[in-house]
Length: 361
Image 1 (tube, one colour):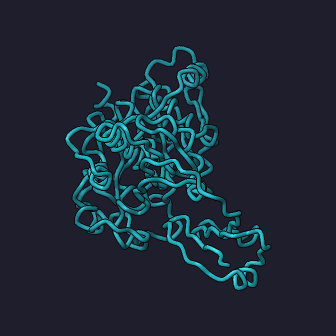
Image 2: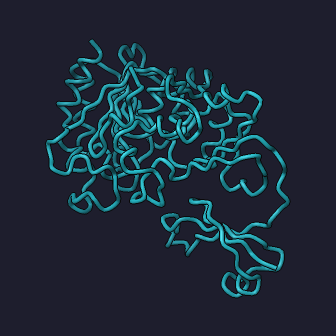
């Protein structure tokens, strides 16, 4: 008998003997499989938790094509167009999307998706073919990526997804599901006579891509005092910028850390303009065809927003020798502990305000 050790990030598997598995992991005889989480998911304060144990079950035959993609919500929005085009190309083939658990409620409502499952449910089903998109649009120096560097730095990410999904890039069908009742709920939370509404997503999981936390309050004040706008602050903070939840004003609806991923879709449909760094909020606003100001520092925006007609970007190209560093791990030489890379610090609140004002005229 053998036990399977599977890396849920890459999908790679290796087999070890039951005896060795019981010795190393203390398994009972009923456990036949192991899932290995990536190192950054280890929670040291609660002990090492990078091994998930589950019982191996007989796979249920679903058939059709399974598209596997983890990543962030933005990638799911970008991939949505490729899914639609693949369904148009093969209308009789069922499409199953396997993604992160928090995105399943969104994924199951994407156009072209027949079934959406959590990534850790892959072992429960079998398909006619699987297109594994994990790290497929990243180069080898970003995770275990497989995309040629030239394609990564010269092509829009949606084009790379299209090629991997076997469809052309002549037309895009970016789409996301929006709950109308959720929209009503958020509109009721806005101040009366809110007038012009601007959505501000100041956060990012990356401390480099994020809007510097000390820039956020001055920007909010400019939008209110000079434009008379109501500002919705949305997204999720990290430990290093969680002070942003304290921003308060009679014309500010601060919903940081108070919404789900599905809520963010509905919330992004309300503003007249969305301001955000290169994160999921940008792609959501673009898919909704909302005016959006994208703030880019370490990645050239032409590889992300080529097909978004409502998106305008600020990008300090050639202002620093390191721009763009392409988000390669370890390439940013910013001072340790500083939030917002040197490239993002060139995008000052005044500069953001000026472009936002132009877009609203």
